[in-house]
Every structure is written in C-alpha cells, then in structure tokens.
Length: 436
Image (cartoon, rainbow, N blue to C red):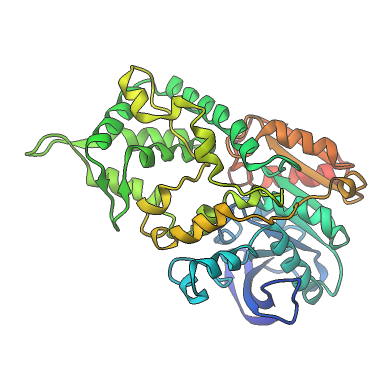
C-alpha cells in the first residue's frame, strides 16, 4: 500500500491510497494490477479513532464519485466514519480498462480473458486484500450503490467476516435470475417509465417521433464521431430512471431542431447534449460487462440478452412505431451490439464484446445457503418501480437474506443515495442498529 500526501477540501481531509492486488485472485503470485482509493475524514476528527466505511459505486464501469467537500451522503457518513471511496478495478485511476489501454493486453481474445476478472467476485476479493492494511484486520461497514449493492451481496455470500454492517441502495440483485430473465422484467418497467414521462410532458410525444423519423432518414454524427441513429436516440431513456431524468429529457427534446437554409436540422446544442449522455468514453466497462454481471450459469453465454429479449417487445421498435401513431418508447439500462459500431469509444472493442457475449464458464456470484444463515446487520433501500433493478427481484432477495431490513420507498428513484443524500444513509444506519 502506498499513501500519498493528504490535502483539504471544505469540511474534509482527503488522502490518496494506492494498492496492488492480483489480477486473478486464484493465482496470487501472478500478474498484479493497481487500485486507487480516496480516503475522506471530517476536518478536525482524528481518523485513528474512527471506524471505516467502504463505498462501492454503481456501474459497472464507474469510478467512485468525485465529491467536493461533504456533498450528498458523505455529509452524514463523515460524522462518524473514515470513508474509503474505492475506484473498482478497471475504473477511474484503478488500472483503467478502455479502448486505449486494452490493446496492451493483446488480441481481443486476450482482452476478453482479462476482463473476465472484473466482476463482483474480483472486486470483493480486492476489498478483502486491502482491508487488513487499512483497518488492522478489523471488519468495516460497506455502502453499495446499485452495482455496488450487487458487490455487497457477493461480499455477504463469500466474506461476511470482513463486514461490520452492509448498507445497500438500489442494488439488491436477484440471486438466480439469468440475463434473459433480468431483461424480460426490465422492458415492461422501462415502458412504464416512458408512459409516465409522456403523461407529464405530452408535447414530447410528437417531438420524440419527429426526431426519430429524422434519424431514420438521416442518421447524425455527434461530436467525436458517434453515429446517432434512431436506436441510439432511444437509448436516452437511461435518463428516465433518475430523479430528475424525465425533466432533463424534456428540456433536451424541446431544443432539438433549428431552421437552416436546407430546412429544419438537429441543432448543435442538441447534438452536443446527446453526445454527453450517450458516449461511453468515460465508462466503457459499463457496456462491456453489463450483461456478464448477471451471468451465473456456467454453460450459458449471455449472448446479447437485451437485444434478443427486445425482439419480443415490438413496442420498442422505432420504425414500427413510426409506421403507426403511438409514442416512441425510449430504452435505457440495456446494451446492444450496435453500441459497438456507433460509439468510437467502443468500436475498437467490438470483437472483445462479442467474445464476452459468447463466453461460457461464468461462475455463480451468490450463495443462497450462506445468505440464509447471514449474521451481518444488513439494510437495503429498495426504490418502488426502480427502472434499473427490478423491485420484485430485490424483494425476493431481501426475504432470502437472514436479518435483512428493507426500506421500500417511492420518494426517490434509483439515484436516491445521491438525491436523498444524508437522509437515505441515516435511515439505513438506523435500520441496521434497530433504532427504527
């Protein structure tokens, strides 16, 4: 472990940490990769007197959020914890995996083999490697948001001795669902989010149809070379699962066209805004590993599950929709083969993605028997009709983990731990402590 110099932000003292861990934890003497984490302690507090809280970000593919001072839930956490914001392997400053670095691994087959070590099982084993050096061997509390909750559930399955408590927000996964089953549950949820958006903003029905029709005839090129097709436009539905996403989408659609000498055209402002939302340049592992995080049947590949399942939901077919008079349905929280041709950040990795989609040998991530005997205090915030993680799956898992206490709410969307911040964390801590 390497500890860099500490520095200050408003209300907090931050310290950078770097670690080396095995790429493959079954081969501890083999290749090693570097991890990065940022420690945060409230100004004026002695860190040596504080228990540790490890934060696992959502994703896959996102580094830990870069807070300024004591933003969001960190305000509450710093009142009693020494917080470690971990960039999970392959993200942020932790040996990043992207179109620039992955060719160093060799062929697409070698890249796919490398990326097979970037699921929740490896992330949890990373945490267990670095924990003793930070805590002196003491267990810590883990807060997992979204995919971070998937990792936390794996933690409870495989290394509960490392945990004082587990807090999960919007991230209780099904213990057994295949990728196909995950997406069969997802498309009806996504459709409900669409209909709720159009009920709020009925003027967007015609706006979305007009943009999609334009793109069917003339796909646009976004800044950086991203090819905006009707299907890519539909993927802006990723916004509909967040607290203010519907409003963001509405404002984006209302500024889509401008008059030009050649007739109406998609505006530069619209195209710039769309690019910022659709590009995977900052988080390519989200696209590469999105289906493998659900893979648990050794003999079964994920095989582009979201694309295959979508074929059974024709309401999401833009051209069929435009042939009628119904509203265009946005997608979101789904990855498709076309992502790896449309996005320049992903295009060089298309063959690698195909190999991951065809891969077999994935191992189960959760141990139902061990979870049924769980003794770690656990609390989970489950958001009613969460677009990203199926509520029914989460409730089924909540019943399967001994002692887990739930807070089911429709006050927040999937990003509740960010939007609700201190209150969400405070409520979960009260639950694990039997204070409510």
